[in-house]
Length: 531
Image 1 (cartoon, helix red, strand yellow):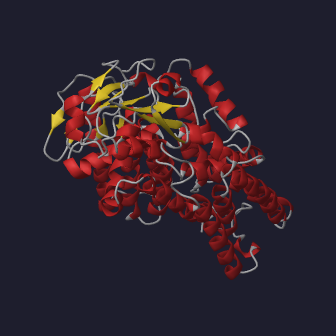
Image 2: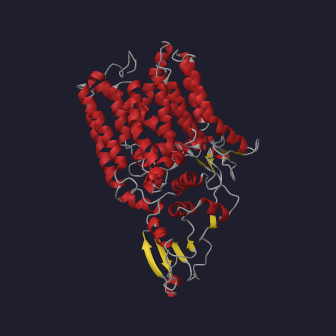
């Protein structure tokens, strides 16, 4: 429990009827959050996003061949698409893939595990910041958050960043009381660097501000655990520093039997810049206010990131945290609220440097939800804590509505973006001998993962339409190709066609057509050889 001797957030643990009641609420909120993240897991959304497919294929290739799709052995950053992808998500998939095989639900396991642990760690962190009741408010708000539920259910590399930043934040709070935990904080902050490249400038900012405040407040001392935590963080950051030097042309790429520091085809260095900051901040405010970014895979327009009403509680919580921090600053007392403000502040700084969408700015939303919970509890402590029950009912109504929408209407919307039916269509197509032509837009990453294409064959045979490019599009590899004339189909080939392809030529030539979701497999009966 935290301090806050003169605040409304301190010493109010007795506002709960008993520790038993608090424990029941904790278990109920936690189970509710976990259930909403694992119900129909691996089915909704379905089938595959192109980025999670590539991450899964790299995990499969590293597990079975010891190299990624560009031929690098255990790279610190993946070279997929030409401009790369963060690697931690892929490496976390490998143990599960070794146990269960390369299934869609398997490549999503790391994300759902981190998402569920984030619920528990949020509760633990806020209990240290304030008290049991505020911690339950934060756990509840995150458990019902549409953004966090959706984030936990599919395997985008960037989706891991909020969880690992949260873990680093929590262990730093603990490390201020017991320096042994600073080592775990250094580990989590170091691993967060392998979650998403746009947070690279933010992690040093967070660490410097938190470390500086720890020194000023007298909570951090120079002991062996501090130096060990710095060593852990430094060792984790070093490969990425080398990666930047390689891709800036300062040093040559590094290829070792157990580690590679690759050179990308093109590096998207301009994604984080000081240019056009007013426009970027306007975009950030738009996303925060309307709680959607126009990308259905990132969330729902109807229910947003954190539900209606939460932004108002965030503003109130921000006022409380700033006020409390200033009060303790003048008294030369430690205020853990400042550490929380650092987390949120770094998210806003990031939003000023990038063109925001929800997954690009996702480091901001857990701190915002925690601050909103603090504001909710602060308001009710000024009036009557029994109003928390009414607020919980208000959010539960929204949560129930979201759950119904997510597994029905929203599922139908995202089916297109996650290519429903492609898995079954690919399974049928590869059952036939001969070349396979597939429509542009299906992305070669999905084909690679679903067919378990040997990475050595892919490397030897792949040709691209647009090499070099930060977004490479494969023209052909192995027996797959996207270079075909839809008006003159080859009867010796099998076709994997998107729903927008004109099928009249296939019908005229007597192809057998089987539809799977949004895809059609066209196969001629004269070519009846099956594998």
